[in-house]
Image (tube, rainbow, N blue to C red; front, side, top):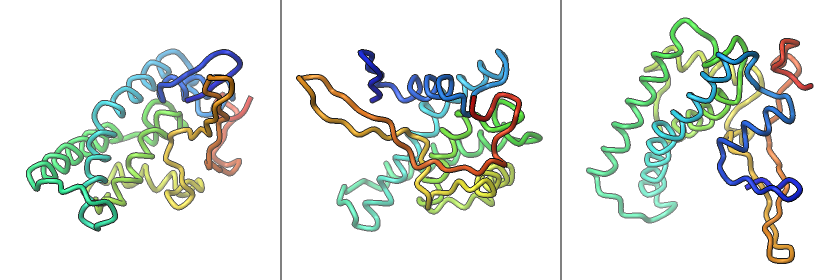
Length: 187
């Protein structure tokens, strides 16, 4: 949830699009890239996120950090979906550094958050060389799961006169080398 003045935004895709535009970070340089970026955000929420977080639930159950009693047929289903999504992402990254533009956009950040969780779920990214190279590019820029970049903008929420209010915070920290002068960096 993001609250700005009297406007409440609750959908993560809408929030990151708004933040990219408002802050001037990780936005698309032109209309075709913007459309591609939007498509990747939707694809992530439809194909990658549910599959990876299904696998993460299985991993929590397996490690007994959270007892869920997930049947093996369901665990296998999540794993197969995740492998298909990771393979699709790998294929789309063939011959390119980033998903929708010459530099990273919020689509890359969104998808990378799920890929970081895939590694926590014992997926070996080396199986998908394009995906592994893309993930390594983030790590060279200083983004890693250890720095808690899950690409979901976290908000702190409180109650004030019956309305939810919040402030946006994120642990995303990138050095200047990850920004460029072509509209991907800060305004």
